[in-house]
Image 1 (cartoon, rainbow over the protein chains, first blue to last red):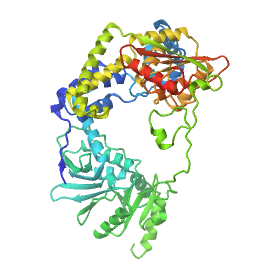
Image 2: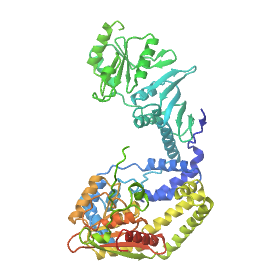
Image 3: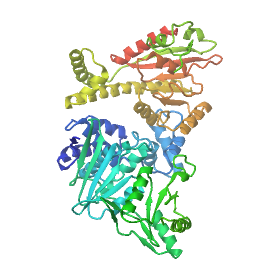
Length: 368
Length: 255
Protein backbone atom coordinates (compact mmCIF):
# COMPACT_ATOMS: atom_id res chain seq x y z
CA UNK A 1 0.00 0.00 0.00
CA UNK A 2 1.49 3.40 -0.98
CA UNK A 3 2.58 5.95 1.58
CA UNK A 4 1.05 9.37 1.02
CA UNK A 5 3.08 12.32 2.26
CA UNK A 6 1.27 14.49 4.78
CA UNK A 7 1.86 18.16 4.19
CA UNK A 8 1.51 19.42 7.71
CA UNK A 9 2.28 23.02 8.59
CA UNK A 10 5.64 23.87 10.10
CA UNK A 11 7.84 26.88 10.70
CA UNK A 12 8.58 27.17 6.98
CA UNK A 13 4.95 28.29 6.53
CA UNK A 14 5.40 31.17 8.96
CA UNK A 15 5.81 33.99 6.39
CA UNK A 16 2.55 33.43 4.57
CA UNK A 17 0.66 32.46 7.72
CA UNK A 18 1.77 35.82 9.10
CA UNK A 19 -0.02 37.47 6.14
CA UNK A 20 -3.23 35.72 7.20
CA UNK A 21 -2.69 36.95 10.72
CA UNK A 22 -2.01 40.51 9.49
CA UNK A 23 -5.19 40.47 7.40
CA UNK A 24 -7.21 39.26 10.37
CA UNK A 25 -5.76 41.96 12.58
CA UNK A 26 -6.61 44.61 9.99
CA UNK A 27 -10.19 43.31 9.89
CA UNK A 28 -10.97 43.48 13.60
CA UNK A 29 -14.48 44.87 14.04
CA UNK A 30 -15.55 43.89 10.50
CA UNK A 31 -17.96 41.02 9.85
CA UNK A 32 -16.21 37.69 9.34
CA UNK A 33 -17.37 37.56 5.72
CA UNK A 34 -15.30 40.66 4.99
CA UNK A 35 -12.23 39.00 6.45
CA UNK A 36 -12.91 35.78 4.54
CA UNK A 37 -13.23 37.73 1.27
CA UNK A 38 -9.93 39.48 2.00
CA UNK A 39 -8.23 36.20 2.77
CA UNK A 40 -9.60 34.68 -0.45
CA UNK A 41 -8.14 37.56 -2.39
CA UNK A 42 -4.62 37.17 -0.97
CA UNK A 43 -2.03 35.98 -3.49
CA UNK A 44 -1.75 32.21 -3.49
CA UNK A 45 1.60 31.04 -2.13
CA UNK A 46 0.72 27.42 -1.49
CA UNK A 47 -1.95 25.02 -2.74
CA UNK A 48 -5.56 26.11 -2.56
CA UNK A 49 -6.38 23.26 -0.17
CA UNK A 50 -3.57 24.21 2.25
CA UNK A 51 -4.71 27.82 2.10
CA UNK A 52 -8.26 26.74 2.86
CA UNK A 53 -7.02 24.66 5.79
CA UNK A 54 -5.06 27.58 7.21
CA UNK A 55 -8.06 29.89 6.85
CA UNK A 56 -10.27 27.33 8.58
CA UNK A 57 -7.71 27.10 11.34
CA UNK A 58 -7.60 30.87 11.77
CA UNK A 59 -11.35 30.82 11.99
CA UNK A 60 -11.21 28.08 14.57
CA UNK A 61 -8.65 29.96 16.65
CA UNK A 62 -10.41 33.34 16.47
CA UNK A 63 -13.95 32.71 15.55
CA UNK A 64 -15.53 30.81 18.39
CA UNK A 65 -19.12 31.79 18.92
CA UNK A 66 -19.22 34.08 21.93
CA UNK A 67 -21.66 33.37 24.71
CA UNK A 68 -23.39 36.66 25.29
CA UNK A 69 -26.27 37.72 27.47
CA UNK A 70 -28.72 38.89 26.34
CA UNK A 71 -28.57 36.69 23.26
CA UNK A 72 -28.34 38.06 19.74
CA UNK A 73 -31.92 36.95 19.18
CA UNK A 74 -33.18 39.00 22.10
CA UNK A 75 -31.23 42.03 20.88
CA UNK A 76 -32.62 41.68 17.35
CA UNK A 77 -36.16 41.43 18.69
CA UNK A 78 -35.62 44.72 20.50
CA UNK A 79 -33.70 46.62 17.83
CA UNK A 80 -35.04 45.56 14.44
CA UNK A 81 -38.34 46.91 13.21
CA UNK A 82 -39.41 49.72 10.89
CA UNK A 83 -36.55 50.99 8.72
CA UNK A 84 -34.44 53.86 10.01
CA UNK A 85 -33.58 56.07 7.07
CA UNK A 86 -31.01 58.42 8.54
CA UNK A 87 -28.02 58.15 10.85
CA UNK A 88 -29.67 60.06 13.67
CA UNK A 89 -32.73 57.81 13.79
CA UNK A 90 -30.47 54.78 13.73
CA UNK A 91 -28.33 56.05 16.60
CA UNK A 92 -31.46 56.90 18.62
CA UNK A 93 -32.90 53.41 18.15
CA UNK A 94 -29.66 51.75 19.20
CA UNK A 95 -29.23 54.05 22.18
CA UNK A 96 -32.77 53.41 23.41
CA UNK A 97 -32.35 49.64 23.17
CA UNK A 98 -28.90 49.80 24.78
CA UNK A 99 -30.25 51.80 27.71
CA UNK A 100 -33.02 49.27 28.19
CA UNK A 101 -30.51 46.43 28.32
CA UNK A 102 -27.92 48.32 30.35
CA UNK A 103 -25.32 48.20 27.55
CA UNK A 104 -23.43 50.73 25.50
CA UNK A 105 -24.65 51.24 21.94
CA UNK A 106 -21.42 49.73 20.60
CA UNK A 107 -21.76 46.65 22.79
CA UNK A 108 -25.36 46.29 21.69
CA UNK A 109 -24.46 46.48 18.02
CA UNK A 110 -21.68 43.93 18.50
CA UNK A 111 -24.24 41.49 19.87
CA UNK A 112 -26.79 42.03 17.14
CA UNK A 113 -25.27 39.43 14.80
CA UNK A 114 -22.96 37.63 17.19
CA UNK A 115 -24.65 34.26 16.60
CA UNK A 116 -24.13 34.29 12.82
CA UNK A 117 -20.83 32.80 11.70
CA UNK A 118 -20.17 35.17 8.79
CA UNK A 119 -21.78 38.25 10.27
CA UNK A 120 -20.30 38.43 13.74
CA UNK A 121 -17.43 40.84 14.12
CA UNK A 122 -13.84 39.67 14.02
CA UNK A 123 -12.40 40.00 17.50
CA UNK A 124 -8.79 39.51 18.48
CA UNK A 125 -8.16 40.05 22.19
CA UNK A 126 -4.59 39.05 21.45
CA UNK A 127 -2.93 38.24 18.16
CA UNK A 128 -2.66 34.45 17.80
CA UNK A 129 0.85 33.19 17.17
CA UNK A 130 1.68 31.67 13.80
CA UNK A 131 2.56 28.43 15.52
CA UNK A 132 -0.87 28.32 17.13
CA UNK A 133 -2.60 28.68 13.75
CA UNK A 134 -0.31 26.05 12.24
CA UNK A 135 -0.87 23.68 15.16
CA UNK A 136 -4.66 24.01 14.95
CA UNK A 137 -4.53 23.36 11.19
CA UNK A 138 -2.40 20.25 11.73
CA UNK A 139 -4.73 18.95 14.43
CA UNK A 140 -7.72 19.49 12.16
CA UNK A 141 -6.03 17.73 9.24
CA UNK A 142 -5.07 14.70 11.32
CA UNK A 143 -8.54 14.53 12.88
CA UNK A 144 -10.07 14.55 9.39
CA UNK A 145 -7.79 11.76 8.23
CA UNK A 146 -8.59 9.73 11.34
CA UNK A 147 -12.30 10.25 10.81
CA UNK A 148 -11.93 8.59 7.39
CA UNK A 149 -9.58 5.82 8.44
CA UNK A 150 -9.96 2.12 7.91
CA UNK A 151 -7.21 1.31 10.34
CA UNK A 152 -4.97 3.28 12.65
CA UNK A 153 -1.68 2.14 14.10
CA UNK A 154 -0.14 4.22 16.86
CA UNK A 155 3.24 3.30 18.28
CA UNK A 156 4.02 5.02 21.56
CA UNK A 157 7.00 5.04 23.85
CA UNK A 158 6.59 5.10 27.62
CA UNK A 159 3.52 4.06 29.61
CA UNK A 160 0.60 3.65 27.19
CA UNK A 161 -2.05 3.14 29.88
CA UNK A 162 -3.47 6.68 29.76
CA UNK A 163 -3.85 6.52 25.98
CA UNK A 164 -5.43 3.07 26.18
CA UNK A 165 -7.86 4.38 28.76
CA UNK A 166 -8.72 7.44 26.65
CA UNK A 167 -9.30 5.23 23.60
CA UNK A 168 -11.51 2.89 25.63
CA UNK A 169 -13.48 5.76 27.13
CA UNK A 170 -14.23 7.02 23.62
CA UNK A 171 -15.56 3.62 22.62
CA UNK A 172 -12.73 2.85 20.21
CA UNK A 173 -11.94 -0.72 19.30
CA UNK A 174 -8.26 -0.83 20.22
CA UNK A 175 -5.76 -3.56 20.92
CA UNK A 176 -2.30 -3.05 22.42
CA UNK A 177 0.78 -5.08 21.54
CA UNK A 178 4.21 -4.86 23.17
CA UNK A 179 7.08 -4.15 20.79
CA UNK A 180 10.62 -5.43 21.02
CA UNK A 181 11.92 -2.16 22.45
CA UNK A 182 10.23 0.11 24.97
CA UNK A 183 7.30 0.90 22.74
CA UNK A 184 3.73 -0.33 22.53
CA UNK A 185 1.64 -0.47 19.39
CA UNK A 186 -2.05 0.36 19.52
CA UNK A 187 -4.11 -0.92 16.63
CA UNK A 188 -7.40 0.91 16.36
CA UNK A 189 -10.20 -0.04 14.04
CA UNK A 190 -11.11 2.89 11.81
CA UNK A 191 -14.65 4.16 11.37
CA UNK A 192 -14.77 3.13 7.72
CA UNK A 193 -14.10 -0.48 8.70
CA UNK A 194 -17.20 -0.49 10.91
CA UNK A 195 -20.85 -0.50 10.04
CA UNK A 196 -21.73 1.36 13.18
CA UNK A 197 -22.24 5.09 13.78
CA UNK A 198 -19.42 5.95 11.40
CA UNK A 199 -19.56 9.69 11.95
CA UNK A 200 -19.70 9.50 15.74
CA UNK A 201 -16.95 6.88 15.81
CA UNK A 202 -14.84 8.91 13.41
CA UNK A 203 -15.20 11.99 15.57
CA UNK A 204 -14.23 9.93 18.63
CA UNK A 205 -11.13 8.72 16.85
CA UNK A 206 -10.28 12.25 15.74
CA UNK A 207 -10.55 13.42 19.34
CA UNK A 208 -7.37 11.45 20.13
CA UNK A 209 -5.27 13.99 18.21
CA UNK A 210 -4.85 16.54 21.03
CA UNK A 211 -3.45 13.80 23.26
CA UNK A 212 -0.65 13.12 20.80
CA UNK A 213 0.89 16.44 21.77
CA UNK A 214 1.54 15.03 25.23
CA UNK A 215 3.66 12.17 23.87
CA UNK A 216 7.41 12.69 23.56
CA UNK A 217 7.73 10.06 20.93
CA UNK A 218 5.16 8.33 18.71
CA UNK A 219 4.57 7.07 15.22
CA UNK A 220 1.12 7.32 13.75
CA UNK A 221 -0.01 5.48 10.64
CA UNK A 222 -3.46 6.16 9.25
CA UNK A 223 -4.76 3.88 6.51
CA UNK A 224 -7.37 5.92 4.71
CA UNK A 225 -8.57 7.26 1.39
CA UNK A 226 -8.43 11.03 1.12
CA UNK A 227 -9.38 11.10 -2.54
CA UNK A 228 -6.06 9.82 -3.94
CA UNK A 229 -6.84 6.15 -3.50
CA UNK A 230 -6.26 4.18 -0.33
CA UNK A 231 -2.87 4.75 1.20
CA UNK A 232 -1.06 5.26 4.46
CA UNK A 233 -0.35 8.59 6.07
CA UNK A 234 2.61 8.41 8.41
CA UNK A 235 3.19 11.07 11.04
CA UNK A 236 5.79 11.40 13.77
CA UNK A 237 7.27 14.22 15.82
CA UNK A 238 8.51 16.84 15.48
CA UNK A 239 5.19 18.37 14.46
CA UNK A 240 3.22 21.37 15.59
CA UNK A 241 0.10 20.48 17.56
CA UNK A 242 -1.97 22.43 20.08
CA UNK A 243 -0.92 21.79 23.69
CA UNK A 244 -2.15 18.50 25.08
CA UNK A 245 -5.25 18.79 27.26
CA UNK A 246 -4.87 18.65 31.02
CA UNK A 247 -5.11 15.12 32.43
CA UNK A 248 -8.72 14.09 32.69
CA UNK A 249 -10.38 14.22 36.08
CA UNK A 250 -11.38 10.67 36.76
CA UNK A 251 -13.24 10.75 40.06
CA UNK A 252 -16.54 10.23 38.24
CA UNK A 253 -15.24 7.62 35.77
CA UNK A 254 -17.26 4.37 36.00
CA UNK A 255 -14.29 2.26 37.13
CA UNK A 256 -13.25 4.77 39.82
CA UNK A 257 -16.77 5.05 41.21
CA UNK A 258 -17.13 1.28 41.14
CA UNK A 259 -13.82 0.87 43.01
CA UNK A 260 -15.09 3.28 45.68
CA UNK A 261 -18.40 1.47 46.04
CA UNK A 262 -16.75 -1.95 46.22
CA UNK A 263 -14.17 -0.82 48.77
CA UNK A 264 -16.98 0.63 50.88
CA UNK A 265 -18.68 -2.77 50.71
CA UNK A 266 -15.54 -4.40 52.11
CA UNK A 267 -14.09 -5.85 48.89
CA UNK A 268 -10.37 -6.08 48.26
CA UNK A 269 -9.91 -3.68 45.32
CA UNK A 270 -6.79 -2.80 43.33
CA UNK A 271 -7.06 0.00 40.78
CA UNK A 272 -5.00 -0.03 37.59
CA UNK A 273 -3.27 -3.39 38.15
CA UNK A 274 -0.17 -3.98 36.00
CA UNK A 275 -0.82 -4.84 32.35
CA UNK A 276 -1.08 -8.51 31.45
CA UNK A 277 0.83 -10.06 28.56
CA UNK A 278 -1.34 -12.41 26.54
CA UNK A 279 0.62 -13.79 23.60
CA UNK A 280 1.41 -10.82 21.36
CA UNK A 281 -1.05 -8.54 23.16
CA UNK A 282 -1.08 -6.37 26.23
CA UNK A 283 -4.24 -6.24 28.31
CA UNK A 284 -5.04 -3.35 30.62
CA UNK A 285 -7.61 -4.39 33.23
CA UNK A 286 -9.04 -1.47 35.20
CA UNK A 287 -9.60 -3.22 38.52
CA UNK A 288 -8.83 -6.37 40.41
CA UNK A 289 -11.67 -7.24 42.85
CA UNK A 290 -11.32 -10.16 45.24
CA UNK A 291 -9.17 -12.00 42.70
CA UNK A 292 -11.39 -11.13 39.72
CA UNK A 293 -10.11 -8.96 36.89
CA UNK A 294 -12.35 -6.23 35.56
CA UNK A 295 -12.11 -4.30 32.32
CA UNK A 296 -14.43 -1.43 31.40
CA UNK A 297 -15.23 -1.12 27.68
CA UNK A 298 -17.41 1.56 26.18
CA UNK A 299 -18.16 -0.08 22.84
CA UNK A 300 -17.52 -3.55 21.43
CA UNK A 301 -18.48 -5.80 18.58
CA UNK A 302 -19.19 -9.50 19.26
CA UNK A 303 -15.83 -10.43 17.69
CA UNK A 304 -13.97 -7.90 19.82
CA UNK A 305 -15.56 -9.26 23.02
CA UNK A 306 -14.83 -12.86 22.09
CA UNK A 307 -11.20 -11.95 21.37
CA UNK A 308 -10.95 -10.16 24.71
CA UNK A 309 -12.04 -13.21 26.68
CA UNK A 310 -9.82 -15.49 24.59
CA UNK A 311 -6.80 -13.27 25.28
CA UNK A 312 -7.39 -13.33 29.03
CA UNK A 313 -7.74 -17.13 28.89
CA UNK A 314 -4.50 -17.27 26.90
CA UNK A 315 -2.83 -15.45 29.79
CA UNK A 316 -4.18 -18.07 32.19
CA UNK A 317 -6.88 -15.76 33.58
CA UNK A 318 -10.40 -17.16 33.76
CA UNK A 319 -11.77 -14.83 36.41
CA UNK A 320 -12.50 -11.92 34.11
CA UNK A 321 -15.54 -9.67 33.90
CA UNK A 322 -16.02 -7.10 31.17
CA UNK A 323 -18.24 -4.14 32.05
CA UNK A 324 -19.69 -2.97 28.74
CA UNK A 325 -21.38 0.36 28.32
CA UNK A 326 -24.58 -0.40 26.47
CA UNK A 327 -26.87 1.85 24.54
CA UNK A 328 -30.38 2.37 25.89
CA UNK A 329 -31.81 -0.74 27.50
CA UNK A 330 -34.47 -1.01 24.84
CA UNK A 331 -31.97 -0.61 21.98
CA UNK A 332 -32.54 -3.64 19.75
CA UNK A 333 -28.93 -3.60 18.52
CA UNK A 334 -27.50 -5.08 21.68
CA UNK A 335 -30.12 -7.00 23.65
CA UNK A 336 -28.71 -8.01 27.03
CA UNK A 337 -29.60 -11.61 26.28
CA UNK A 338 -27.08 -11.65 23.42
CA UNK A 339 -24.16 -10.70 25.63
CA UNK A 340 -21.76 -13.53 26.51
CA UNK A 341 -21.49 -14.65 30.15
CA UNK A 342 -18.98 -12.57 32.06
CA UNK A 343 -20.25 -9.31 30.54
CA UNK A 344 -22.00 -6.82 32.80
CA UNK A 345 -23.81 -4.13 30.81
CA UNK A 346 -24.07 -0.64 32.24
CA UNK A 347 -25.23 2.73 31.09
CA UNK A 348 -23.84 5.52 33.25
CA UNK A 349 -22.58 3.88 36.44
CA UNK A 350 -21.63 0.28 37.13
CA UNK A 351 -23.82 -1.20 39.84
CA UNK A 352 -21.53 -2.66 42.53
CA UNK A 353 -24.31 -4.92 43.80
CA UNK A 354 -24.91 -6.44 40.38
CA UNK A 355 -21.20 -6.93 39.91
CA UNK A 356 -20.83 -8.76 43.21
CA UNK A 357 -23.82 -10.88 42.28
CA UNK A 358 -22.20 -11.74 38.93
CA UNK A 359 -18.93 -12.59 40.68
CA UNK A 360 -20.73 -14.78 43.16
CA UNK A 361 -22.70 -16.55 40.40
CA UNK A 362 -19.63 -17.02 38.23
CA UNK A 363 -17.58 -18.32 41.16
CA UNK A 364 -20.09 -21.16 41.57
CA UNK A 365 -19.95 -22.12 37.89
CA UNK A 366 -17.50 -24.82 36.77
CA UNK A 367 -15.39 -22.20 34.91
CA UNK A 368 -15.31 -19.75 37.83
CA UNK B 1 -40.20 1.82 -9.02
CA UNK B 2 -43.83 2.00 -10.07
CA UNK B 3 -44.56 3.80 -13.29
CA UNK B 4 -47.84 5.67 -13.11
CA UNK B 5 -50.22 4.96 -15.99
CA UNK B 6 -50.99 8.65 -16.25
CA UNK B 7 -49.29 11.76 -14.93
CA UNK B 8 -50.65 15.21 -14.31
CA UNK B 9 -48.33 18.05 -13.45
CA UNK B 10 -49.44 21.25 -11.79
CA UNK B 11 -47.11 24.20 -11.39
CA UNK B 12 -47.28 27.91 -10.77
CA UNK B 13 -43.76 28.39 -12.08
CA UNK B 14 -43.03 26.15 -15.08
CA UNK B 15 -39.33 25.33 -15.36
CA UNK B 16 -37.31 27.13 -18.00
CA UNK B 17 -36.28 23.96 -19.81
CA UNK B 18 -37.76 21.10 -21.74
CA UNK B 19 -37.72 18.94 -18.60
CA UNK B 20 -41.44 19.40 -17.93
CA UNK B 21 -42.43 18.10 -21.34
CA UNK B 22 -39.92 15.25 -21.15
CA UNK B 23 -41.05 14.00 -17.74
CA UNK B 24 -44.75 14.81 -17.75
CA UNK B 25 -45.85 15.56 -21.30
CA UNK B 26 -47.18 18.53 -23.24
CA UNK B 27 -48.93 21.46 -21.57
CA UNK B 28 -52.67 20.80 -21.79
CA UNK B 29 -53.95 23.88 -20.03
CA UNK B 30 -52.37 27.12 -18.97
CA UNK B 31 -53.56 30.25 -17.31
CA UNK B 32 -51.37 33.32 -17.56
CA UNK B 33 -50.56 35.68 -14.75
CA UNK B 34 -52.62 38.41 -16.46
CA UNK B 35 -55.65 36.08 -16.57
CA UNK B 36 -55.55 35.73 -12.80
CA UNK B 37 -55.32 39.42 -11.99
CA UNK B 38 -58.52 40.51 -10.31
CA UNK B 39 -59.73 37.19 -8.86
CA UNK B 40 -56.68 35.16 -7.97
CA UNK B 41 -54.01 37.85 -7.94
CA UNK B 42 -53.83 41.54 -7.15
CA UNK B 43 -53.15 43.94 -10.00
CA UNK B 44 -49.54 45.01 -10.11
CA UNK B 45 -46.99 47.31 -11.70
CA UNK B 46 -43.35 46.56 -12.29
CA UNK B 47 -41.04 49.55 -12.35
CA UNK B 48 -37.39 49.30 -13.27
CA UNK B 49 -35.21 51.80 -11.49
CA UNK B 50 -31.96 52.41 -13.39
CA UNK B 51 -28.97 52.82 -11.10
CA UNK B 52 -25.83 54.69 -12.08
CA UNK B 53 -22.56 53.66 -10.54
CA UNK B 54 -20.53 56.44 -8.98
CA UNK B 55 -17.42 57.51 -10.83
CA UNK B 56 -15.02 55.53 -8.67
CA UNK B 57 -17.35 52.56 -8.54
CA UNK B 58 -17.59 52.52 -12.34
CA UNK B 59 -13.84 52.62 -12.77
CA UNK B 60 -13.38 49.84 -10.24
CA UNK B 61 -16.11 47.74 -11.83
CA UNK B 62 -14.54 48.08 -15.28
CA UNK B 63 -11.16 47.14 -13.95
CA UNK B 64 -12.51 44.04 -12.19
CA UNK B 65 -14.69 42.93 -15.11
CA UNK B 66 -11.85 43.49 -17.54
CA UNK B 67 -9.55 41.28 -15.51
CA UNK B 68 -12.17 38.55 -15.40
CA UNK B 69 -13.55 38.80 -18.92
CA UNK B 70 -10.17 38.49 -20.64
CA UNK B 71 -9.28 35.25 -18.89
CA UNK B 72 -12.77 33.80 -19.15
CA UNK B 73 -12.90 34.47 -22.89
CA UNK B 74 -9.47 32.88 -23.36
CA UNK B 75 -10.59 29.84 -21.36
CA UNK B 76 -13.77 29.52 -23.43
CA UNK B 77 -11.77 29.69 -26.65
CA UNK B 78 -9.25 27.14 -25.45
CA UNK B 79 -11.78 24.65 -24.15
CA UNK B 80 -14.50 25.08 -26.74
CA UNK B 81 -17.07 26.32 -24.27
CA UNK B 82 -16.37 24.47 -21.02
CA UNK B 83 -18.72 25.02 -18.10
CA UNK B 84 -18.44 27.68 -15.43
CA UNK B 85 -17.76 24.94 -12.90
CA UNK B 86 -14.73 23.79 -14.90
CA UNK B 87 -13.51 27.37 -15.23
CA UNK B 88 -13.77 27.93 -11.48
CA UNK B 89 -11.99 24.65 -10.70
CA UNK B 90 -9.21 25.36 -13.18
CA UNK B 91 -8.78 28.94 -11.97
CA UNK B 92 -8.58 27.86 -8.33
CA UNK B 93 -5.36 25.98 -9.08
CA UNK B 94 -3.14 28.96 -9.84
CA UNK B 95 -2.39 32.28 -8.24
CA UNK B 96 -3.40 34.15 -11.41
CA UNK B 97 -6.62 32.16 -11.65
CA UNK B 98 -7.51 32.85 -8.05
CA UNK B 99 -6.93 36.52 -8.67
CA UNK B 100 -9.38 36.41 -11.57
CA UNK B 101 -12.00 34.62 -9.48
CA UNK B 102 -11.51 37.18 -6.72
CA UNK B 103 -12.00 39.96 -9.30
CA UNK B 104 -15.19 38.33 -10.51
CA UNK B 105 -16.53 38.02 -6.96
CA UNK B 106 -15.56 41.60 -6.20
CA UNK B 107 -17.32 42.87 -9.34
CA UNK B 108 -20.50 41.10 -8.32
CA UNK B 109 -20.23 42.40 -4.77
CA UNK B 110 -19.76 45.91 -6.13
CA UNK B 111 -23.00 45.95 -8.11
CA UNK B 112 -24.91 44.00 -5.45
CA UNK B 113 -25.35 47.12 -3.36
CA UNK B 114 -23.52 50.20 -4.65
CA UNK B 115 -24.20 53.69 -3.36
CA UNK B 116 -26.86 54.27 -6.05
CA UNK B 117 -28.91 51.27 -4.89
CA UNK B 118 -28.43 52.35 -1.30
CA UNK B 119 -29.87 55.79 -2.08
CA UNK B 120 -32.67 54.41 -4.24
CA UNK B 121 -33.71 51.92 -1.56
CA UNK B 122 -33.88 54.61 1.10
CA UNK B 123 -35.86 56.89 -1.22
CA UNK B 124 -38.36 54.15 -2.05
CA UNK B 125 -38.82 53.18 1.58
CA UNK B 126 -39.33 56.83 2.51
CA UNK B 127 -41.82 57.28 -0.32
CA UNK B 128 -43.79 54.19 0.73
CA UNK B 129 -43.31 54.64 4.48
CA UNK B 130 -45.46 52.28 6.51
CA UNK B 131 -46.22 50.02 3.52
CA UNK B 132 -45.51 46.36 4.13
CA UNK B 133 -42.45 45.79 1.97
CA UNK B 134 -40.32 42.83 0.99
CA UNK B 135 -36.76 43.63 -0.07
CA UNK B 136 -35.08 40.93 -2.16
CA UNK B 137 -31.32 40.79 -2.53
CA UNK B 138 -29.00 38.66 -4.62
CA UNK B 139 -27.11 37.22 -1.63
CA UNK B 140 -27.21 36.95 2.14
CA UNK B 141 -24.33 39.38 2.61
CA UNK B 142 -26.36 42.19 1.00
CA UNK B 143 -29.43 41.21 3.01
CA UNK B 144 -27.42 41.55 6.23
CA UNK B 145 -25.84 44.80 5.08
CA UNK B 146 -29.28 46.29 4.53
CA UNK B 147 -30.55 44.88 7.82
CA UNK B 148 -27.53 46.35 9.59
CA UNK B 149 -27.90 49.79 8.02
CA UNK B 150 -31.67 50.18 8.23
CA UNK B 151 -32.25 48.03 11.35
CA UNK B 152 -34.82 45.90 9.57
CA UNK B 153 -35.34 42.18 9.88
CA UNK B 154 -33.35 39.81 7.71
CA UNK B 155 -35.01 36.52 6.83
CA UNK B 156 -32.27 34.08 5.92
CA UNK B 157 -31.54 30.40 6.29
CA UNK B 158 -29.26 31.22 9.25
CA UNK B 159 -32.08 32.74 11.28
CA UNK B 160 -33.77 29.98 13.24
CA UNK B 161 -37.27 28.84 12.44
CA UNK B 162 -38.82 30.17 15.65
CA UNK B 163 -37.25 33.59 15.20
CA UNK B 164 -38.36 33.72 11.57
CA UNK B 165 -41.91 32.89 12.61
CA UNK B 166 -41.81 35.64 15.21
CA UNK B 167 -40.53 38.10 12.58
CA UNK B 168 -43.34 37.18 10.21
CA UNK B 169 -45.86 37.68 13.03
CA UNK B 170 -44.49 41.15 13.69
CA UNK B 171 -44.60 41.92 9.97
CA UNK B 172 -48.20 40.74 9.83
CA UNK B 173 -49.12 42.85 12.85
CA UNK B 174 -47.52 45.94 11.30
CA UNK B 175 -44.94 46.15 14.07
CA UNK B 176 -42.22 45.91 11.43
CA UNK B 177 -42.94 47.06 7.91
CA UNK B 178 -39.91 45.72 6.05
CA UNK B 179 -38.35 42.27 5.66
CA UNK B 180 -35.16 41.72 3.70
CA UNK B 181 -34.11 38.38 2.26
CA UNK B 182 -32.05 36.84 -0.50
CA UNK B 183 -33.78 33.51 -1.05
CA UNK B 184 -35.79 32.33 1.91
CA UNK B 185 -38.76 34.53 1.07
CA UNK B 186 -38.73 33.41 -2.58
CA UNK B 187 -40.73 30.32 -1.82
CA UNK B 188 -41.61 27.85 0.88
CA UNK B 189 -42.65 30.37 3.55
CA UNK B 190 -46.13 31.65 4.10
CA UNK B 191 -45.41 35.35 3.97
CA UNK B 192 -48.13 37.67 5.19
CA UNK B 193 -49.74 40.15 2.86
CA UNK B 194 -47.35 42.72 1.44
CA UNK B 195 -47.97 45.44 -1.13
CA UNK B 196 -44.50 46.38 -2.18
CA UNK B 197 -41.47 44.40 -3.37
CA UNK B 198 -38.08 45.97 -4.01
CA UNK B 199 -35.70 43.73 -5.94
CA UNK B 200 -32.25 45.01 -5.04
CA UNK B 201 -30.50 42.07 -6.67
CA UNK B 202 -31.26 38.77 -8.31
CA UNK B 203 -30.56 36.49 -11.20
CA UNK B 204 -31.91 36.16 -14.70
CA UNK B 205 -34.29 33.40 -13.61
CA UNK B 206 -37.85 34.28 -14.57
CA UNK B 207 -39.10 31.42 -12.42
CA UNK B 208 -37.48 32.87 -9.32
CA UNK B 209 -38.67 36.33 -10.26
CA UNK B 210 -42.27 35.12 -10.51
CA UNK B 211 -41.95 33.49 -7.08
CA UNK B 212 -40.76 36.80 -5.67
CA UNK B 213 -43.43 38.89 -7.34
CA UNK B 214 -46.04 36.38 -6.22
CA UNK B 215 -45.28 37.35 -2.64
CA UNK B 216 -47.00 40.73 -3.08
CA UNK B 217 -49.86 39.57 -5.27
CA UNK B 218 -52.20 38.21 -2.62
CA UNK B 219 -55.49 39.83 -3.71
CA UNK B 220 -57.39 42.36 -1.61
CA UNK B 221 -60.14 44.80 -2.43
CA UNK B 222 -58.65 47.81 -4.22
CA UNK B 223 -55.07 46.58 -3.90
CA UNK B 224 -52.49 47.41 -6.54
CA UNK B 225 -49.11 45.91 -5.77
CA UNK B 226 -45.91 47.47 -6.92
CA UNK B 227 -42.57 45.86 -7.73
CA UNK B 228 -39.39 47.90 -8.11
CA UNK B 229 -36.38 46.34 -9.76
CA UNK B 230 -33.09 48.14 -9.19
CA UNK B 231 -30.68 47.48 -12.05
CA UNK B 232 -27.20 48.93 -12.41
CA UNK B 233 -26.82 50.39 -15.89
CA UNK B 234 -24.24 48.99 -18.30
CA UNK B 235 -23.89 45.79 -16.30
CA UNK B 236 -25.29 42.27 -16.47
CA UNK B 237 -28.18 43.40 -14.31
CA UNK B 238 -29.87 45.18 -17.23
CA UNK B 239 -29.71 41.94 -19.19
CA UNK B 240 -31.14 40.05 -16.20
CA UNK B 241 -34.10 42.44 -16.01
CA UNK B 242 -34.84 41.95 -19.72
CA UNK B 243 -34.66 38.20 -19.45
CA UNK B 244 -36.92 38.18 -16.40
CA UNK B 245 -39.41 40.40 -18.18
CA UNK B 246 -39.40 38.11 -21.22
CA UNK B 247 -39.90 35.10 -18.99
CA UNK B 248 -42.79 36.77 -17.21
CA UNK B 249 -44.37 37.67 -20.55
CA UNK B 250 -44.11 34.03 -21.60
CA UNK B 251 -46.07 33.10 -18.50
CA UNK B 252 -48.79 35.45 -19.53
CA UNK B 253 -47.80 38.35 -17.30
CA UNK B 254 -47.32 41.94 -18.35
CA UNK B 255 -43.93 42.53 -19.93
